[in-house]
Length: 71
Image: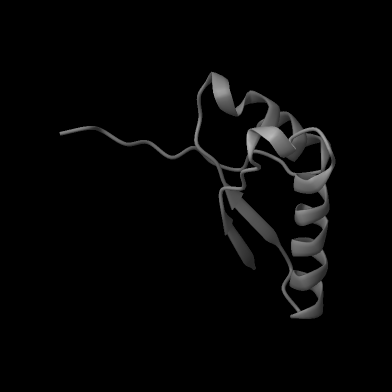
């Protein structure tokens, strides 16, 4: 698989299709490399809702949850 550790766009550049294009580029690169999946981890919080909506609209699905504990 090809793994992306979060994907962010600068606030001034958002809503222009850049993140969607990057996701598609990643998917095409994964296919070119013979990988069978594209995986992406993303932080959570109100500021990430638009990003998560984009991922879901790009045919990604939530496949797990990651838990952490501050010590």
